[in-house]
Image (cartoon, rainbow, N blue to C red; front, side, top):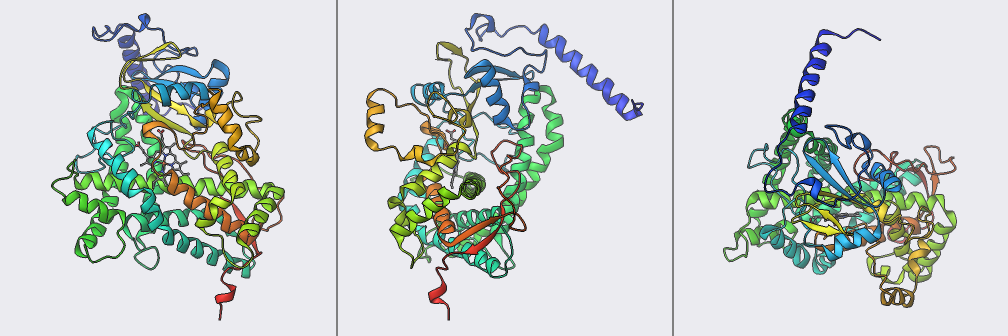
Length: 523
Ligand code: HEM
C-alpha cells in the first residue's frame, strides 16, 4: 500500500478523533425527559446497524434500489437510523402505503426540512410548495394551484402552447429524418417539457439569443445534481457544517443566478401588466401578490420559490417518463404497431393526433400509465411525521422522516401480476372489474407515480396532457431505428444512479417518416 501523505495522515487523525468523540457521546447521551424512551416504543423492524452510522452503509447511490432490496430482505415497513441525527421509516408495499396515504394522511403531511435551510441567506431560496411545512402558507398555495395555476381551466388555456411545442419537436425530427441523421430523443423531449413549462409559467423566450428557457434548463439540471449531494447533509449530524462548506454554498450561488433571471422577467411582467390577452402563471401570482385582501400575504420569495418548484418538478419528470415510454415501445414492436393502429383508427391518416383525441385512445393512456408504474421518475417521496402515530400496530415517533418507495409499491406482487413486465393491457381492465374490486374492499393505494393524499402531485393532469399527446404524435409520425447507426437490436434500458429513475443513456435513434402532418401545408 502507498504510504500516506502528510495531509492524508492529519485528515485520518482528525476523523478518528471526531468519530471516537461522537461515539462516546452517543453511548453516554442522557435521554430527553419529553421523549418516550426508545426502548419503551414498539418500533418497526430494523436490520442490524453499525455504531454511529446506523444503517447508512446499506444505502447505495441509487436510493430506490437500495430501499427496495432492504424491503425484500427485511419486510415492507422498516425503521432505519441514518447517522447520529436522523431516523427513517421506509414504506415499500401497497398495504402499508394505504395506511400512510389514507388512514394517516394528515399525520404524514409534512416534508422533512432540507439540509442547510438554516444556513442559506434569508432572501435566497425560500420555501416552495414542495418543501413547505403543512400549514397556512402550504394550504393557501395548494388551493391556488388546484383551482387556478394548475387547474383544469389553465390546462385548457395552455393547450396551444403544448401543441406548438410538439409541432416544433416534429419539425426538428423531420429535418433529421430528411438528412438521415440520428436524433437524441432524450434531449429533444427535455427541451419540449422545459419550453412548455417556461411558457406556461412566465411566457419566456424559448429561442434566439436571449433564450431564457435554455438558461433555466441549465440551472434546473445543475441544481438537481447538487440537490442529491446536499440531501446527504441532513444525515451528517454534527458534520453538517462541513457538508455546507462543500455543497451548500454552490447551491446558494445557483439560487442567486436563478433569482436574477426571475427578477428580470418579473420586471417585464409588471411593465405590461393588464395589457396581455392570455395570462401566464406569473401574471396570476402577481395579482395575488398585490391583492391586500388575499387570505395569505405572499412575498416575492414565495412566488420565486413556487415557480422554481414547477421547473424542477415539471420538466425532467415528464421528459424521463416519455423517454422510457418510447424505449419500451421500440423494444416491443407489436405494442408500437397496436398503438399506431389505435391512433389511425380514431384520428385517420390525414391529421395529427390532438389532446382532444386522447379520451378515445385507451391503449395510448394504458401505455403511458404502465411506463409510470415501471419507471416512476420520482421513485421515492419523502414525508415527515407531524405527531406520534401507529402504522400496522407499530409506534412511529413524531418527527420521523418517512421514505415511501413508490417504485416498490408499484412492484408489489400482492397487487400486480408479473410486476416487472411491461404490460400496458393490465390498465385496460373494465370499469366493472374495478367496481367489483372496490366493493370487496380492495381499494388499495397501489398506483402511485404521483404520490397520493393531500401532498400528492398537483401537476399530474398537466403531465398526462403533455405525455399522452407527445407520445401519440411520435408514434403516429415516425418509425424508429435504434442506436447511433440505426443498426442496434434493443434500446439499452440501464437506469442512472441518483434519487430519481432516469435513463443512464439518452435515447438516440434514427427516425424514418411514416406520416408528415405538415406536408399538405408545404409550398
Ligand atoms: C411525470 C411527471 C411527474 C411525476 C412522476 C411527478 C411526481 C411527483 C411526486 C411523486 C410528488 C410527491 C407526492 C407525494 O409526496 O405524495 C410530486 C409533488 C409535486 N409535484 Fe409532481 N410529478 C410530475 C409532474 C409535475 C408537474 C408537471 C408539476 C408542475 C408543473 C409538478 C409539481 C409538483 C409539486 C409542486 C409538488 C409538491 C406538492 C406538495 O408538496 O404539495 N409535478 N410530484
